[in-house]
Image (spheres, one colour):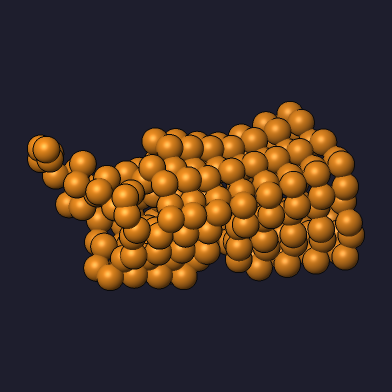
Length: 192
């Protein structure tokens, strides 16, 4: 296992390669690009990613703990691959002002997670626990929630979300006008 600790990694491009048997501890990645990368048996502990791009990164036996993303582009990520088998907690501590495209969140515990100011394009939240999660001021496009617990989640000032009232739990969730009206779309009713 390669150990990389307390290192600042800037302007690195990783494209069409395999990164394996590497543990990153307390590292800061700035303006790095990971494109079509396969990570095998890699660990990220207490790492920060600033203005990085992760595109179509695949994970095998990888873990991430206490890491944060700031102003990053995350495309085609299946977050359940990163956590390891049987572990349903989310591997990231925070995401601030990130763009997420084609990301899948399947059976992940996102309780109290803060997605504020991020944007979601063609993402899927399936059977996730999003209790008290914050999507405040987030932007959505073609993103779906199915079988999720959104109790007490915060969607105030969020835009273009589409949430099926019959397929998700929304008790105590917070919304703001005029976007809250979009919740009625799933009821197949006519409003004049």
